[in-house]
Image 1 (cartoon, rainbow, N blue to C red):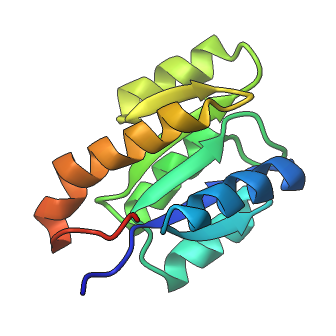
Image 2 (cartoon, rainbow, N blue to C red):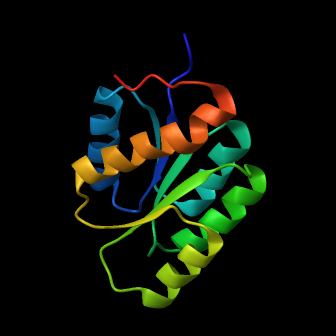
Length: 134
């Protein structure tokens, strides 16, 4: 039996992050939630994460900077950026850095699930075999 895909959700809106985490957990994913970029970086030092889902606009450190720093800790980390605001410059930088998707809030959960499955099939299975998502 293979390990479930591990997803880290980083958002300074705890209710949004927890609701998304609960839905993903019901779909079989192992989900962690962080309310800040610094906390997320600490968690990434301790645990292997497959997918980072991070808000772009946050206090302390924006989501793109988090992505860049997180990738130094875990080079194979797949990242989806999410935003409720027009942050064109940050979003463009995120794309240039290699973010796999830019999602708008409120999140389309069906789209998110479809993207996660696509990433599992394209990237994660090559890394460590099939992942359970039932």
